[in-house]
Amino acid sequence: MSVNTFNKEINRRISEVAELGKYLWQKGWAERNAGNISVNIQEYMTDELREKLLPTATSVLPLDRAYPSLAGFFFLVTGTGKRMRDLALDPEHNSLMIRVTDAGDGYQMFSLGELVLNIHPTSELPTHLAIHEYLVLKGAKEKTVVHTHPNELISITQIRKFCNEEALNHLLWGMHPETMVIVPDGAGFLPYMLPGSQDIADATLKKFAFHKVIIWEKHGSFAIGRDVFEAFDLIDTLAKSAQIYFQCKSAGFEPEGLSQEKIAELKELSAKFLA
Ligand code: 2HA
Ligand code: ZN
Image 1 (tube, rainbow, N blue to C red):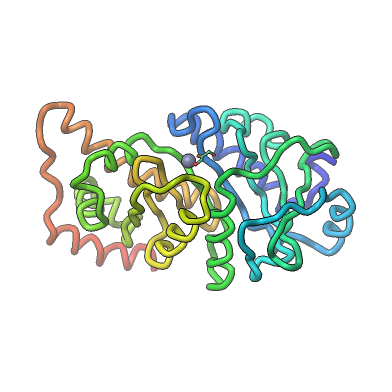
Image 2: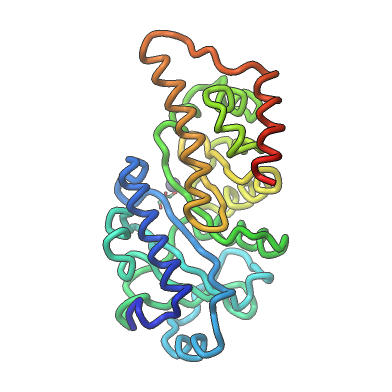
């Protein structure tokens, strides 16, 4: 089965994931296998396609915890150990489709290419599924989750005084007016935890109740969006602010930033802009 045999909507999501892989690589945020992407494609899964796919499923693999609200849901996910730069050129061999079992506590895999599947989902699958479950339960419009390693945002979290949401967001909002307009809820900040674990998934999930983008200390960022580009834009905007901060510092001076008053004024503008 090749990419072309899915329906138009699913093919489009596969292409978008590949395109995002290119952006992440070009940004320098995707060393080796860094980063991962998932898309909830349940709404595009017709009965006809499901019937065609199910006989090609792998056996069931267990999940560390159950996601009852995702029972039967299909997702596109990037593969563990796969490179974003390869994903950009060849989504069939660097990403796959999974279906959460009817009990919600396992998943089956489906190839986007040949029938023999030589790929497993991202190591951050627990965090991706936890976020998707939260979005489904909320009836949210966001269907995509993007994780990447933006140098600028990781660097900020190497500086202890910015390792809290208040200081971090004050800094990022103050570097450029667009940052408040695009990310009015600011970034959630998660202190360092072991990647890939259920604990980091649970802690990240709690942050998404208040933010659309989370920064993991000394590691990277997670964002949600209606499509992968919307999630990318949140991270890109924050990274731009961090970059401005470091460019000023490299030029030998302390950036002035925007005052609390100006930031508050922008928050009002953002409410109108995003309404
Ligand atoms: O996909 O980024 O956090 C590799 C990672 C793990
Ligand atoms: Zn990572």
